[in-house]
Structures are given as C-alpha cells and as structure tokens.
Amino acid sequence: MLNTNDDSLSAIYAYLHRTSRKETQTDLLHLLDSYTDSSDVNSPLQHFITEQKIRISKNKNVEHFDKETQDFAKFEDILKATRAVLQNEDETFIRDFSIKVFNDSKRFENLQSQVRSILTQYGDYDDKETVLSEYGIVKTPTYVCVKGNARITLGEQEINLSALQGDIAFSTQTLKEITNIAVFGSRIITIENLTSFHNYKNQNDFVIYLGGFHNTVKRDFICMMYKQNPNKVFLHFGDIDVGGFYILNHLKKRTDIPFKPLNMDKTILQKYKAQTKQLTSEDKKRINKMLGQNDFAEYAETLNYMIRHDCKLEQEVVKE
Image 1 (cartoon, rainbow, N blue to C red):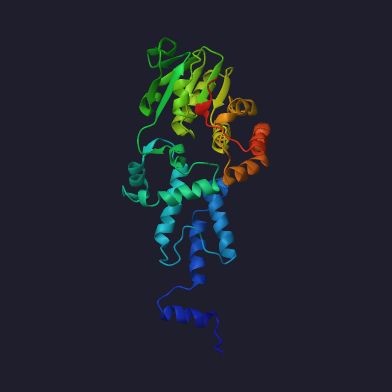
Image 2: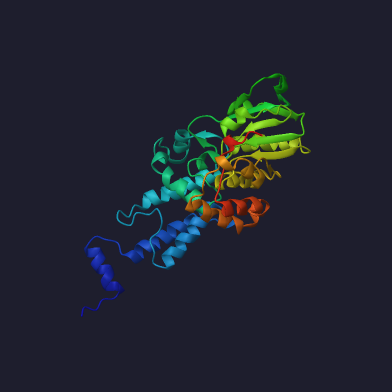
C-alpha cells in the first residue's frame, strides 16, 4: 500500500500544477479574515464569513467559491461588493455603483446574484429581488407616492395634498428638498401594494405607497415624517401572508417606529374567507418559524389562525 504524507501530497499537487484542498482552505481563511469586522458582527456579511469559517473547519465547500476554477479574484469581489452594498448610504444606479467599487460599469452586474443571495440568506430580508434597493442601489430613480390629509413644504413652496383628488409622487432629488411634513389627520398609513394604495379612499389619513420592502429613500422620508409628527398613529396595510408580516416587521425594525397592522388580522380573513388562498408548504414552514420568534409575537393570533385554517389573503381583495 502506498504511504504518503503531507509533504508527498504537496509535491504531487505541485507536479500536477494543482493546489491541494488544504492550501485552498488556508488561502480562503486568509481572505475571509481580511473582510472580518469585529465591530459589525451582526451584519449579513459577517454572518456569512463566520459560517464559511465553520464550513472550512468541517472540510465543507465554501459557498459562492468555485472549487473547480479556484477563482479567488471573483470570490473576493463578491465579498468586496457585499461590503460596499452594506456601506452604501445614497441612492446610486447599479452601473454607477459598479464603477465606484470596481472601476468597471459591468462587474457588479456579474456578481449581484451572489450578493443578493448572501444578503437574503444571512440578513433580515424576505425578498431577494428588492434587497439591493433597500440599500439605495437601483436601476431607476425611486419615487415616493403619497396622498391624503397633509401639507408638504419644499423650500419656500407648500403643497396642500388635501386639495388634490389623487396622489403625487416625489423623486429622490425632490425628496431631498422637503423641509416639513405636516399631517392634519390622526393616522399615517403605509400601503404595500399599488392597487390598494390607489383604491384607498379615506382622505383624512395620510397614505404612503411602500411598494413592498422599503428602501433607504422611503425609510428616510418616513423617519422625517415621524420626527415631525410623533403623536400620530402609524399603521401598515399589507398582504395577510408571510411576506406581508415580514415587510411590517422589517419596517418597524429599520425605522424604529411603532407601526401597527391595519386590516391584517383574523377578522379580515374571516370576512373575506371566500377569497383566501391555501398556504404552500413553504408558507407553513415560515409561519411556524415566525411563531417561534419574539419579533412576531404581536401577530401570533393571526398567524395561528392562518395555520389552523390553511389560508392567506392578498390585500387587493380587502375593501375597508
């Protein structure tokens, strides 16, 4: 029987112009160490790095590293891009972001799938498609659509939304010019879906179209409004499903505003029973996970009802 040791194996790999698994793992550990930040241990990137170090210790493959091509440069670019996304503060177009990080307008486009995966798998996000926009990295400018009982001041100009029949949209640049938001009614409502936003008729409320998960631009607008109108009731109206409750919880956590659900309880599920849909196996798995987390304790009655009656509801059905 052939007896080999580490030196022999190294010699064999060198002769074959290949790198041993042990050497690859050592190089990966060095690379992961260079992106480790002890001051930000709760970020998705740091969770990812910690998990990869554990995988290496168990002799498992590192996620998003191609062991066949041994492409360290691409893996480092994935780490670099993920870190840059998490550090981004201003709304930036994807190609401009790529130039800023890589001096190449197309490089990030080739990496964004892996970056999205890391952020959604190791961060507090529910939607892989919108996760980049949460950090202000977008394909097109963000617009915030609003309507209802309020007055918005931009520099010396005032816009009385109460006098408008419909809604109005503010671009990213225009939002930066807003100096005051005076809400006259008692409630401020964010609405998840566009159809429901347009159909919402209560003109005494101030209503914001959220469009799923909020991004930096919308979050800053909502936080400004809360700071200037702290005594108002903040409500969120979304789908009565897993995604809807994730969006509500994410909104509360990222804005630190005590949002309460609107039309998202078992009473609505009972009223619109005929329009409910059955839960998928993935829905049930995620609801049970939510029921075990303190963040979702407030919605436990509704979540348990959804499990017991095998139902969920799209908010467009609700006409309240």
